[in-house]
Image 1 (tube, rainbow, N blue to C red):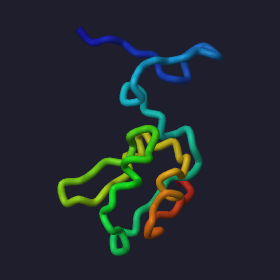
Image 2: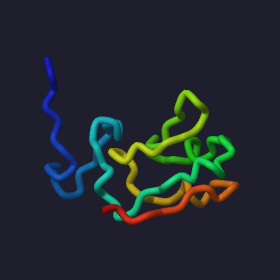
Image 3: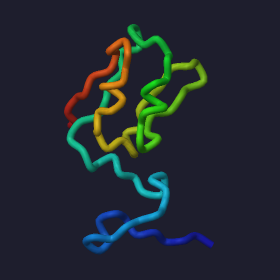
Image 4: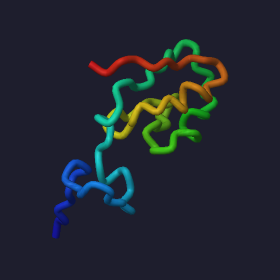
Length: 92
């Protein structure tokens, strides 16, 4: 049986959700998202470890990628990148 889940917009004001972010696509909350320059990326995966939403996934080749369905655009991954291969760009 499939459970119908209300979206975050349908929750009452002040509601607290204990559901995993994966249950709700929150990627449209922000106005920017991180972009990775793979030529400069050292595959350290710090962006993955610091992401509070789990929106930075590790690919099979060792590089990371941003799952824009869940990225809220906080920029923590960009700030923590030691080789500065990431930058925030405006969502279109």
